[in-house]
Amino acid sequence: MTRVLAVADEVHEPLYGELLRELGPNLIISCGDLPFDYLEYLVTVANVPLLWVPGNHDPSPAREQAIPSNPLRPDYLDKAHREPFGPPGGVALDGRIVEIAGLRLAGIGGSLNYSDGPHQYSEPQMRRRAAKLRLRARLARVAGRNPIDLFVSHIPPAGCGDDPDDPAHRGAEAFLRLLLDVRPSWMLHGHIHPYEGALPDRTIGVTQVVNVVPYRLLEVKG
Image (cartoon, rainbow, N blue to C red; front, side, top):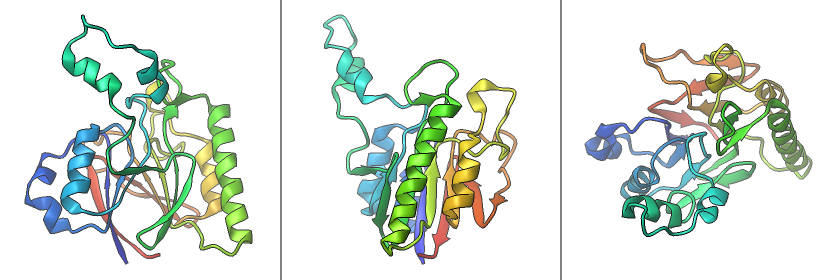
């Protein structure tokens, strides 16, 4: 069993203390919208691999490269635009299949479009991204590789704790077919804040869908 610490959207202050050591994860997964220095701290202290997908509030590489240094911009903002994209020590999972810590993981970051911001996609675009990942998973099966254990995203599938009437908090229809085709044991996502207490896990086919905001510790069989 692999102990997976999944985080998303909200900095959980106790993880800066003894809690992280007590949890003892073998792998850290970020489902997006977290400060990169927070993720860097987690991976440094835990000394385990970090996989991540971007959320809709994360910066994009293109945006960072497009904004030149400006002497009138405050130093901390200027520094943010010059830093490399992604948390130091992390492995980007967006659109990829990665084998690590005894598990095979696939990921799709971003949200559905609501303000034309970074990492926002229309439903047709999300369907195409999911179709590419399904194809990669199918080719991997043909090649005799192990099945996908975990699918990681920022937003949930449609109908899994999302709000279809709120453009910023819709789930992706494309993920429903992906889960039924790829059949991962787990799907981990963020984006939906549990303001009124923990949100229940859901099941789609054989996949347990888990909202990890602000963190969840899971024991996953590879």
